[in-house]
Length: 484
Ligand code: 5AD
Ligand code: SF4
View: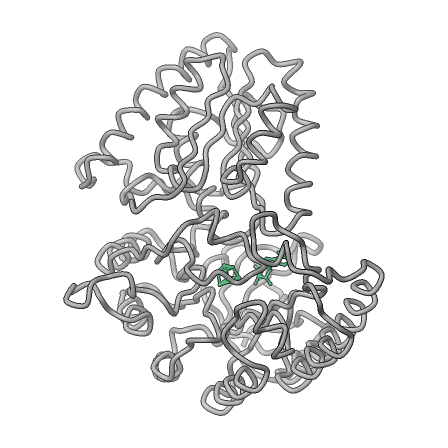
């Protein structure tokens, strides 16, 4: 649940573009609808935002929640509410299944609550087959929209509150970036900042380019303005978000003064007064530049953490994934990072069971895990996504074989991560305190620059501040520490 109401940009005098002003008019209109519903119910109507998937979706959900609160809903984490919205993900099939499962349960609330509206948005809704399925089997859904027109949420909400029909508004693509809409942050002290949308890489297993469209970068001016606003509002840590941040700015024309590189953008963000830590997610190994490594090196504000998705350690599988690097070039890049930035933690994503993957291919992946000594790795079982090239590749790997390879890999990943984590014992590190420990109220939990969690004695007052902590004991993926 969001702890603080930090509604940025709901003030008309600060809003520049015409579309945002139009949406503010719809916010006013929705306020009237929600206020009459409040009179009818004798209490504030409740709204619940359920988020699946990545950091991008989490950021989008903050925008949805801001609008719902602005128009008069009370936030709740229960789907027993007057407005429920699922912000969906479709990167793997299990994400889809979780959405349908939750939706099925939600229909029971709707049977008992005539005022209830159910909405779905996000990546899954960009797939035509999903929309058809919902139209056929989930008739009780009131509103469907995709990733490209989320900025129109206030308008769609009004339409939905005015109508009893299922409202569907899905765009194939967009070149539009609407700035200056309200955002409600989940944490008062840290925030994601979108720097670009979409992806042009077309890795053969991945649905993202089809559901999030082509790369569109936000102008550096708008990004810096947002960071300055956040800093003024008490945010100390920002995470710059994009599917492939290395391509930032490449969509601007050569002579466009906006055309700066991602490392240059990071340097500018580091200059924002009040922003003490800058993270980024995700760079692609094919084009992580020396300039980026240099910029990280000379900017202590940039977090000592690089998430560098490997996907596979087999050069042949990487070729068929269209990743545009090889086992050796990936390892050479990791070597360079470890040499130039010895205190940086490297984490990764790995897929097991890509079509045609053999035991030997997985041995190559395991070899990379050992040599790269990842600080952590997210391992996924390949999920066939209709419409992607890999879905029609021959030699889909039998489930039992995938499972065996997955388990073999997971063991090495866990052993490596444990060994890596231990090496910081005895260090003194600055951590940003994120909250009181749920299991022991005498402890607080913070994050080191390299993203590792640390628990140590402290109190609520410390939330949102940086403190120096000595790392006393490593417990696998987290440390127990003591303030110094
Ligand atoms: N199957 C399994 N994992 C996938 N990912 C992306 N697409 C698929 C898929 N079809 C993983 C990749 C990516 C992460 C966000 O999700 O590892 O880096
Ligand atoms: Fe998908 Fe590849 Fe783009 Fe990442 S870089 S979103 S894996 S297509």
